[in-house]
Image 1: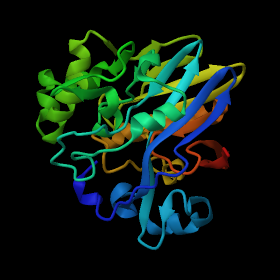
Image 2 (image 1 turned 90 degrees about the horizontal axis):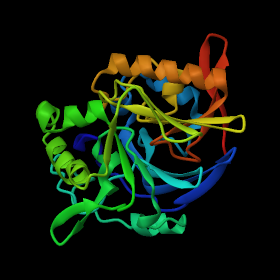
Image 3 (image 1 turned 90 degrees about the vertical axis):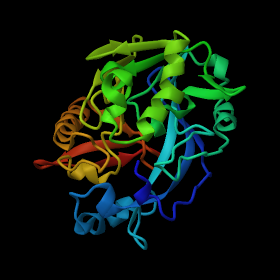
Amino acid sequence: MRSDVLDGVQSDVQGDVRGFVIGDVEVFRVVEWRAPYAPTRDLVPGVGPEVWRDNRQALVPDHWEPGGDRAVVALQTWVVRSSGRTVLVDTGVGNGRERPGNALFHQRQGDFPERLARAGVRPEDVDVVVNTHIHGDHVGWNTHEVEGSWVPTFPNATYLLPAADDHHFGPDGGYGGGVRPDDRLIHEDSIAPVHKSGQAVLWDGEHRIDEHLTLESAPGHTPGSSVLRVASRGERAVFVGDLLHSPVQILHPECSSCFCLDPGQAATSRRRVLEQAVDEGELLIPAHFGGSGVVEVRRRGDALAFGRWTP
């Protein structure tokens, strides 16, 4: 996320742990922070102001602050308990990171480990870490600092990393081609230590975690962006990472966020995933939605629309 969209961000630390079930799979959300974030015209440039106004009732207060015309977003980790294992979906920003290109993330100090503990999770309990993609707000708690060195936060976990992102943002890809200087720092403090410890597993295309959980490539936001599908006892959900930053993208899936490296490919992935969510009755769980964070998607004629928001 760019530093030029961060002016005036304030954290909301209330309601930081919530949970629900999908068949036999338990899901808890652990919020690192939630805030009015970016001007709507900057976050999703293709969506006009009339879309926000026309959907005010659904968007305020959890997704839009109309007074400042800012989209409300959250940074959060999803704890998934499936088949006797504990899985984390994305790991937020982390503490003490050098992020000179991003004022909000630079040298941040938060209480995420304590919040994770409120969900009943100790670092040694985590079996699998899923990074839906390699951006700084999705991989930060992969590691923590011990005596001046970055080491994996979750010592017993396998870290599932999209191979395309690991190449693009790693040294072989020139750390994202040097477009964003922070990309080198992100890989060095949050990804490379996991490789060094032998806990990283690279995957591409599709990766089955267990009988309920399957990772699937959905490129565009980054080269390796992915979604995690959940299916258990006839109930379904899909964690979509950064395919969506705001509910207005359900109404206009052709519109990508300002953070998508390939907006056209991201729109194609978004449309495909949203259409499948409708067809298969999957709950939609994006990485950055405020409110309950979980919504149904429905068809309204030839268009897509919001369905029920989970309590």
